[in-house]
Length: 379
Picture (cartoon, rainbow, N blue to C red):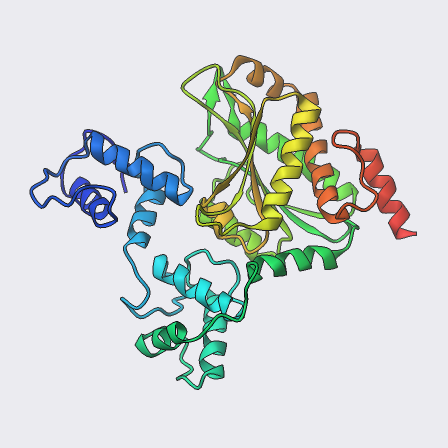
C-alpha cells in the first residue's frame, strides 16, 4: 500500500478517519470529508504512541495493520491457525493473554495466531471438555470468560523467558545469536554525504559475528550483503534457526542535525506487556555503548516493531548514532569505532548470561576478558 499522509484524499483516507473515530480518537462524524487533515494526523500520532510504533503521523503498512488489528474484539469472529496467512488482531492478543493467565503456554502475547497459540488453545479445550478443534469460537470464548486465572503476580511467558536464560548457564559456547544488519540490497537506509546506513551496519555485523564466533557462539546473519528481507522475514528467520537472542543493528536519522546519540529498543506495549529479558539485554547494551563510545544516552524504549514482536526469543534493536549528525557520522565512519561498538555488544551479551556472577563494572570488561572467562569455564 502507498503511505498516507496529511493532504491525501479519497477512500483510503476516509477508511483511516472512520477507523480512528471507531477507536475514539476522532469525533464520530458521518459527514466528515474523506481528507487526511491535521486532526487525522494528530489522531494517528496518538494511536502510534499508544501502540509502540514510530510516531510520525504517517499511515504506512505497520500503522495500517495496527489500525485494522485494533478493530477486532474477542468473540467477534472465529480464530484459527492459518499457515499461509496467520490471523492477527486485538482479539488474538486478548485470547493469548487469557490463556497465559490460565496457565497455558502460547508463547509471547503478540496478537498473531501462530502454531504455539493453537497448541495452547487445543490443550485448554481438551482440559475443559470442549471440542478440541483449535478454533476459538463462541463456546471457547464463553469458557475463557467464565474461568478464574491461575497465574498471578507476573507474566508467565516472560518468567519462562527468564528461566531459559538461567538454565542456559554463563558460558557463551553453543548459544545461537541472530545478528540483523538493517536494510540491505536496494534499501540503503539513511544515506548522508555518501555514507549509507546499510553498509555501516553490515560491516558492524561482520565484526560482531567474528568476535562471537571466537567465543564459541553460533552467530547467524539475518541477511546477505545484497538482500533486504522484510522485518517479519527477519523475525521468522530467527525463529526458524532457534535463536537465543536477536540483535538488530541500525543507525538513526532526524530532520534536526543536532539530534545525536545511541538508543536501544525491546518488545513492550503501553499496557505493560514487556519482554523482561529483552529489556534487560537492551539496558546492558545501552550502558556499555554509552560508556565505551561517549555517545549521548538516548535510553531504552518499548516498541512493537515486527522484529521485536514476532521473534520468539528476546530481541533488541540498537540505533547507533545519527548519520544526520556530523559528529556521530564521523565516528561511525571510523572502523576502529565500529570495533569498539562490536566489543560493547558482545560484552553486554556476556553480562546477560553471567546473571551478576563474576561481573565487572560497565565499560571495563574486554573481549580478552570474555575469552579468558570462556576458557576458565571450559576447564
